[in-house]
Length: 277
Ligand code: KMH
Ligand code: ZN
Image 1 (cartoon, rainbow, N blue to C red):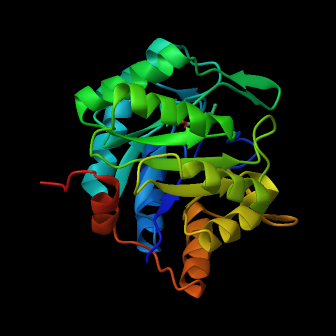
Image 2 (cartoon, rainbow, N blue to C red; image 1 turned 90 degrees about the vertical axis):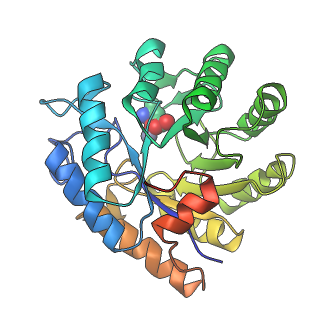
Image 3 (cartoon, rainbow, N blue to C red; image 1 turned 120 degrees about the vertical axis):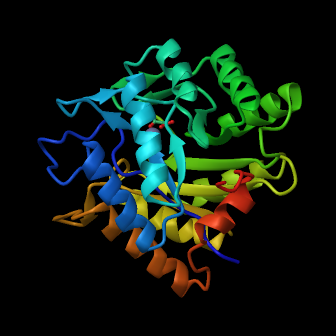
């Protein structure tokens, strides 16, 4: 069995001024994507920034980003529909018009540090059904255990996603969500049994939970997400140098676990993302 490695290189929360190596321009993002593909990533989860390095959902920038990443890598391009906590629902839905192969789709509202990451049921349904119509494969983002029950309700009411495969990403260790622990991950794997046969999961641990979550996910048969969206510290007192550094570490640990990184072609086959023509 191989390992799907997703890189989340930028996010919406990390401040470029505080972390100068954060990729925020299109050139920086493309370079990061190439480096991460070379060391084992097969999916890129994308948030973009404006000219001042602030998070944006500008439609033109999103489209340019999708085109540039498709031209320069074989990575599956997954746009974030989560955006920043301040983004309106209409802008988050419009992300789906920018031509991504995949998009994230969060399964519920969660406290997010001092903020609230709002995901109403009707909004979730809108995202899911529009992705079905547009031929976009969702990645269901799970910040807390109960959100897996919401996913079960979503699928049983509105049907399977485009591509016919269910893949979830456990985002663990957000202040306000589930903790980034092996116990919490195992609790999620039990709940995953109520989802369609063949459902796969990846996991990422925010901040210092990165390594315990990575090890627990591999041990439980899961896949991995890493990147500066989720952690900017490589080890205690040691800032992350690049996203590729995080992907390379994940790929190395996956190899040690005899679960080497998956190719982009295999990731497409697993997730139900059409091959590039
Ligand atoms: N930036 C967070 C508020 C996603 O990309 O879908 C939401 C987030 C989830 O990052
Ligand atoms: Zn994100």
